[in-house]
Length: 506
Image 1 (cartoon, rainbow, N blue to C red):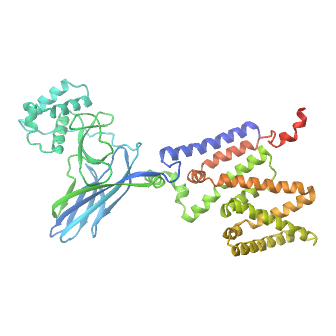
Image 2 (spheres, helix red, strand yellow):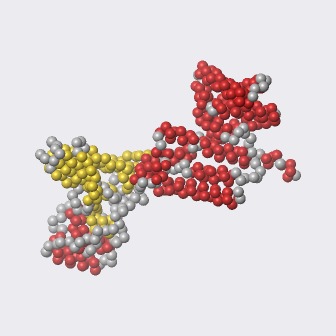
C-alpha cells in the first residue's frame, strides 16, 4: 500500500476518534479528570392542606424551561395518591389525586437541577398578546401611558425599561397612581406591567422562581418580568427596569396562573426549601446524554454491569502497553521474546506490584530454565516438552506461594495470577535462543522483555490515563493511527546508532 494511503487512514482514524472525544467532552459534559463533582441544587416544595369529605385533587406548577439549568431528576413524594404529569398554559403541572383522605395532608415534590450554560429555553415563538379588556377610567390611563412611553422609546427593550422606571418613580403621576392604587405585592406590580405591555402589543409575562444559593430552609419566590423582542425572551428587573436576571435564577413557572390548586381541601400552604449538594460529574453527563436520547450513551462502558466495567478497565489499557511495545522495539531497538509477552507480564505486575513482580518473574524464569535444560536430555517432542514446562511452572508457583506465606510475605501469593502459559513459553523461547545463538542473546532478550514490561506497567498504571481511556474509548482510534504510522518507519533505531557508528568515519 502506498504511503499516502497509510497517511489517509491514520488521518481518518484520528479525525473520527477526536471528533467523538470532543463531542462527549464539550457537548455531553464528560469530565477529563476523575472524581470531579458538580454542584446540584435540590428544591423541595411541601403542599400542606386540610382534607375535605370527598375526593382530593392537587395541581402544582413545576419547572418546564429554565435557561442555564438542566434537570437531573425529579420525584413526587406522597402516600396513597395517584400521580401524573400534564402540560398547561403555565408549563408543566404535577397532579396528585386520591378518592378519600382524612385529616391534615402534606404532599412533596422534589427536583434536582445543575447548571449548564448550553441549556436554554425552547419556546422561542411568543404568544401574541390579545388586547387586554380594561374598563374605564383605567383604559384611558393605560392609553395615555403607553403613548407617552412609546414616544420616548425605540424598541421593546427600551419601552420596557422606560415603563418600569416610571412605575418605580417615587413621584407617580395621576395615571400611574390610579393603576397602582390596589397593588400590594411585587407579583401584582409585575402583573400591571404585563397588562400595559400587552396594551402596547409587546409579548410579556410574569416569571416566578428562586435565586439558588446554599441552603435555604424557607426559600422565597421571586417574581421577574419577561418580554419577547421578536427573536428571544429578555428578562427585566421589575424594581429597577434594568435588563438582568438574578444570579442562578431557577424559573419555576411562568404566567399569571396560581402556583397550586387544591380541589377538595382547604387551608392550603406551600413552602419551599433549597439544598446544595455535589454529584459525580460522570453521573450528570450520563443523565444529560440520556435526556437528549444521544445514541453514544447506549454504547458507553458505563452502561455495562459493574463487574464487566472492572474487566474492561484493565483490558482497555492493553493498547497503551502495545504502543509502548512498538516504541521500544521500532524506535529504540530493544530485543524481547515474543510480540506481546512483555505487555502480558506488565498486566501481571499490576497484581504483584512492580518490585515483587520483577523478583518473582526473574525467579520463575531462572528456575524454569534450569528445569528446561534437564528436560532437554530426555529428548521430548515439542508439545510434551511445553506441557512439562507448564506443569513445572505451576509447581514452582505453588512452592513460592507456600514459602512466602510461611515467611509472612503475602505478596508472593499473587504469583498465581501470572499468565502461566506465557511464563512457560518464555522459558521455552529463552532456552531455544540459548542453544541456537548463545547465552548472551538469550539474556539480552530476557532483559529486554523485562524492561519493556516495566515501561508498559508504568504507563498502564497511570490512573488519570486509565480513566481517560475508559471514559473516552474512542481515543484508542488515535492510538491505532499512531501505531499504523509507526509501522511505516524504516529508519535507524536508537540502539543501532552505536552499532553503525564506525560507518560514519568518526
